[in-house]
Image (tube, rainbow, N blue to C red):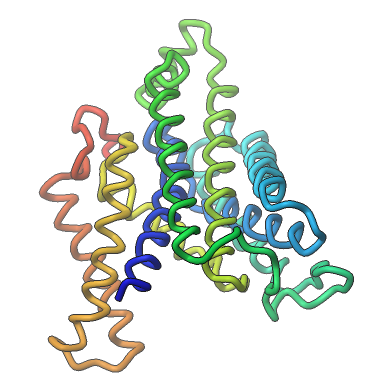
Length: 297
């Protein structure tokens, strides 16, 4: 039981971190990103492949975060001047493209190349056991939360909120809206890249199927549930999401007799139902502010 609680805490911390990046992009800046998993993919694969080459973990994570930010730069330069729906389409396309590349290409694993579809394993892990990884993930989550709270309360963060509400206003005040959007997109991507490194350490083996588009919509669920534009709400959303996952995993089979595949589909259906009820009852999320709601724009 203690081992499962450690696993649950690490998973919650990873997805809270992953969702904080999306919350910065969408909740604070209004950028619709349906391919957030692409940044996590870059962070995870960069960290583990560099580890296999003997690069220290901290540098591997830092390089993964930088590469994820550069991916955000490339996507942003080509789409952020266009309508929001172009960004949504491009991001989901890029995420699938990356997943297919690592699935079909040989990857440098140590001194040899191996097919990516067989998974990456045998890479270095943070010192200590899962308990140490839990403490480390919580520390990084706390540090990221503090950093984001400092940023969104600064003049930089207020410009992002103004862009989300009506980008014509900051434009009229002389702000470079495109550059602010790009910064938000890159920083959110870098945070997701760090979350990818923790996911790789937790699973100890990285497969392309770990990075399917559905994971992005888990992050959307967490952000919407907690309240867009609220970092504390995002963490709360992650806690509720994984709490629901655990409760239904253990108790649902006792209530409803279904086979494994139908049970999984049923749990996702219930998540959808909860979100629909939440959108009717409290569209701004649990801790969100109705006046800052971006869904109805």
